[in-house]
Length: 318
Ligand code: FDA
Image (cartoon, rainbow, N blue to C red; front, side, top):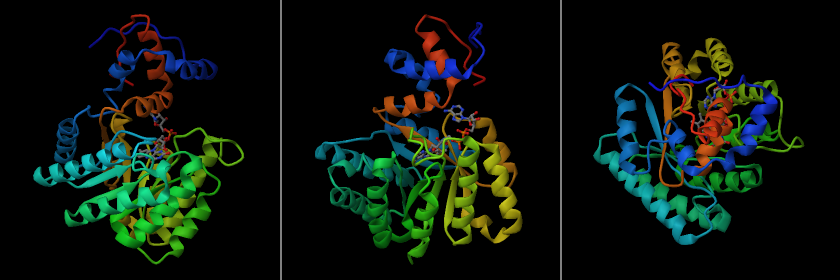
């Protein structure tokens, strides 16, 4: 274990300053701190981590890192990697559940391009009994993502799921819109990781949590499967309270957590009778993903900054 040196007490203003300074931190330092959040750069790293988690009784979803892809060949390369990943999961006897970013699948090149790429992947996945989660990115992409998702859902039913962000004011309406359609519905509910303007998004954490639980209830009441993706015990408590009054919904939900975030919570959640799925990202395009995670963890972000000055910190307790 490395030796801890004094770190200044966390104060919100300082945290904001640290978050704003993160882009100045050299990549090798960010890379060192990212080890907890990503399985590695190679597919084999993700498969090894996924196998360990599956062995320990957790579900897994695999994510190839990458976003905002503007080049058609790169989009197809990412889709090919997902095919190879699904094949490797089949060969390894592992659960086949993968997560895709719309802008990695060509959304910036047009909704038709994105639909064609993910639709083809959906057919490939169907033949191999795999599930695809079409994720959600920042607010300018939400309409396009939901339109592409509705086409995917019409074509592939519950084999393709989506993500909704409770921080956005629009989300209860989106829930109602999705529940209005006749096809099976599988939603990952999240708070939302992107910085969004006050005019369209709740800024107070309490409001985001309240909206999270409200949307989750609406989805479960409406018969959807919900992946409740959170590390917030207040959300887990709220879900358990709901399930006490609606035990029939128990088989239609699970908790989802990110690799490297609050790992001690996983077992506690499982003891409460909820299945847990872990999100295992891998690939060479780790930088934007890791920067978002570091901004969500001011303490680790401070370590990154102090790491620039050669301090060695004990990261084991964060
Ligand atoms: P909150 O942010 O309040 O965190 C709860 C507690 O967890 C905090 O007190 C803190 O201690 C701890 N914590 C949170 N982040 C941490 C970190 N990085 N390091 C250490 N501790 C941390 N978002 C999105 O916009 N689109 C998407 O498609 C997805 N997909 C997705 C999949 C999965 C499986 C998860 C778990 C999350 C996402 N997200 C996402 C991210 C999501 O929107 C949200 O930003 C994070 O889950 C953090 O929100 P929490 O609900 O955990 O609450």
